[in-house]
Image (cartoon, rainbow, N blue to C red; front, side, top):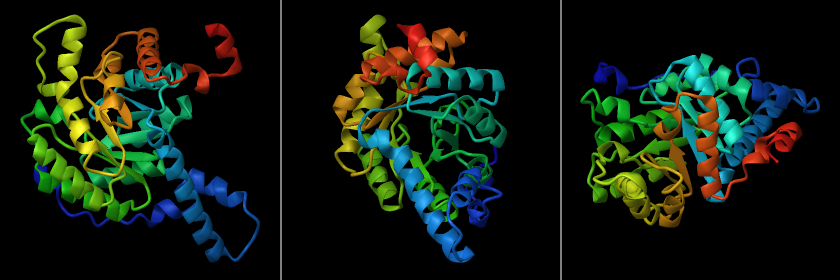
Length: 306
């Protein structure tokens, strides 16, 4: 991937997102309102809708019980993404995070009512995904880039954040702080990201962790870097911190205790081969966080789980 194209200035406009034809949520909202002068009505309803949407997306973070299931930034396999989204929905997650692709957003939205987040390191790509129905964007989930020898500097991440806020000023924005930085530098970057308007800071670290033990001890070792980052960053910023990378049902509660407002889980779910196993893993993690797995279920599904 050509890094110069990733970090080039973004000149796109977000005006299209405010047109009912391009935003189904705005279209429905406008259609439900009484007739008033068009420009005034559009301005008022747009602000109200965007404010209500962000409040809804962030609700579980403010309650410190968010659980985001991640399918993978470069995972465009529709079958796998569908399985992960289904597992998130049936297992009791509060959010789902998928690759930044409009067709995947439409697929996910057809399978769940959970807020759909898209991950990318190309702010311009967020526009089409948001038009397709994504309610949250994430600059991050860098693990696949580390495999290619690509790392991200604080300056690059700040530029990506500024570009994203410029073109999508009202969309919920999460930004991952790279584990490749020292812990003090992670904290400094998180503070700057908060100043630039990020709504959530996400931590990572599982990729660099090599547990020496198996079982529970190994799971705790695996999560140590991201837990340390969550502890340090949550005490330096006022916005929610999402602890992600290398977490499990054993360590997810530790993340909340460390100061995180939510957890992000990827490979523990998306690497499983069967959707039933994925659902079971999501439920284990949700249970460990005290999240009711049946809050998104239909009455029929609740009966089946009794």
